[in-house]
Amino acid sequence: MICQTTRWILLLGVLLLNRPAFAQNDAEYRRKLDQAAFLMTKATVEFLATDAQTFPNVKSKQCACDSYEGLKEFIAQNDLVGADKLTDDARKRAAQNIAQINQPRTALEGVKDYLVQKVATGDRITRQTLPGYPAFQSTLDGIITSALGAGPAVVAPPQPVASAEEDAPADSIENTEKTPVTTPSPTQSNWNAMDSFALILSILSLIAVAFLAYLVIKNQKPQQSARDVQFDSQLAKLSDRISKLEVRKNQTNENFQLNAQLEALERAVRLLEQNRAEKPAAPAVKVPLEVITPVQDAPTEPESAARPSNRFRTPTLPAKPTAFYARTADLGDGFSAGGLLTTPERDTVFDISLQSDTQATYQVSENADAQRLALSDPYSYLNDACEYLTQPNPNSRIRTEQVGRLTLQGDKWKITEKAKIRFI
Image 1 (cartoon, one colour):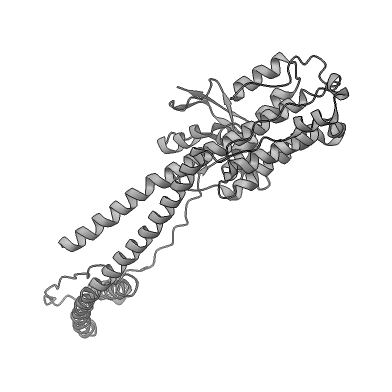
Image 2: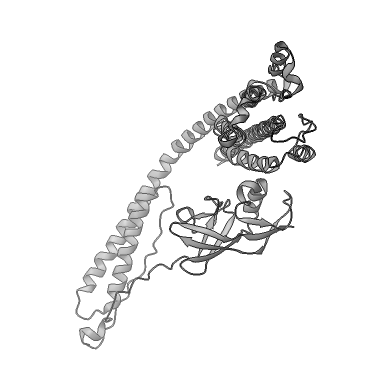
């Protein structure tokens, strides 16, 4: 008993030591990807400021900001019409892509392609001829490379002015468009050391788990043999009782109660054999032996009166579900019918109640785990399906002031009216 307790304490200690390292790495990596997405958005806005034909009222082409709020102030000061909406859309796209952290390069490349498509393709393709467009492309690539471990984040270089700087010498333009050379920082070295430590700790954890599993399996073999003996003993006793009841069943003065006892014993045998086949580690089923008392002779009655007229019951059909649960509005303007769950889980943010075969209402779940998940990234979980009455706060709770409404269209529950929520 003491050895077994020691093994479980050792396993719990290994898991607890391993968890903080992975949690810290994951959080730090996500912050790094978020910062890279912000820098790419900032570089895009600064590139738009160099388009004097579209934005003639630009006062400054460089933004000395380190947050989305500061970037929006820069947009308003320079009258960059439409850039604020581009910033919000790029931020939402980045949050959705970074959620797939198993492919960070793909996530950042997706943000880059989205920004280039919005500002320099289609009817805006003429911007590719601006002097600062090659430097803009190089800056985006440099930010992605730096975020994936090549060094600190790359700051967007100054964009060339369209009028006065066109007459500058060629050497000056080339120096302006060069990307600063990045050097490894102490933070990057600490990050690599932490990755190595987490890898070594993971390997040691796997070795410890494998060793503990071997010890558990080895110690269970003698117990399994004892359980087999108990199973055989119980089966022998039940078989003896069935034989005695079979003899009594054939007597002429026996009633239908013996048949019920016989069927109950047969079910117990089947259950015992099933437990032995499917769950060998479960404790043996103990069936108490009952003393068979002789049954007094009863007046002879017709067979139809002695036995029930119907010994079978009509099976009950399962009830149709009236509620479903969803993690996000995965179709943007609705929920896919095939992705709904019939039971709530820790990450199901929305509760859906059926009103009819084609109409339903939904609200944000009251579950604390689901609300914490939604507050950790409201852009991904709440924006498409909810209308905010107050601004999101990470330390608040979500209260549904008015339920949203859905209509079934094919394999999609389309949102016809968004739910109104308040952060309290």
